[in-house]
Length: 218
Image (cartoon, rainbow, N blue to C red; front, side, top):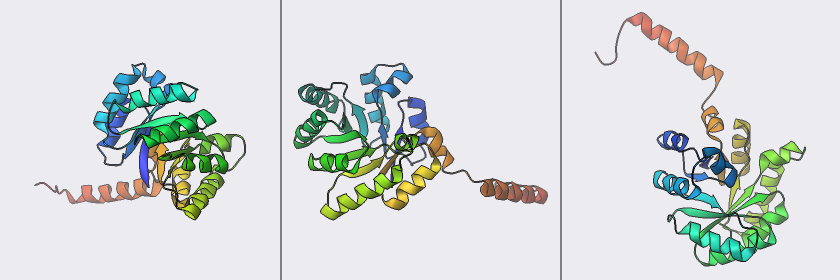
């Protein structure tokens, strides 16, 4: 499974990219607003840090304007994935931008039918929102499973990008079902390494080592 991080905070991206665990980045207007910086400056800087896909979202709602904005964003860096909403206008924009040779991330997916449409429009990524479905007592993982089955049935190349991830369990469950990518908030990504038995075992090892009075480097 590929890990994208869902943030526009440059320091977070640099820190996590150094671990080798970051395959890409997703941004949106809300995340850019939180950074307090110019969207174009932030996007270019992220693309310089992370060689994998960086999703940059259009703000227009009509297809022609989405296409214009998408083509502009795609010129910022070769690893830009233009992010469009799953509306009919967004699907039209996806088809045109994909035909142009650009990566496209179709976002705000909440049903298997929507995911089928995105694949037929040539989307590089489809972003089903797990957490938001869970918020209204629907099963986000069931949606991932449905999309996986449909895409495998017809050999669609669109990658399933599990989004709106809230917990470490979301990541593991999406991986078991077969999501291609998870886009993860930095705090959740860090939690993937946490386990109380790891902490307990390390503490015991260090206590035993201290008793020896030795040093590896001397």
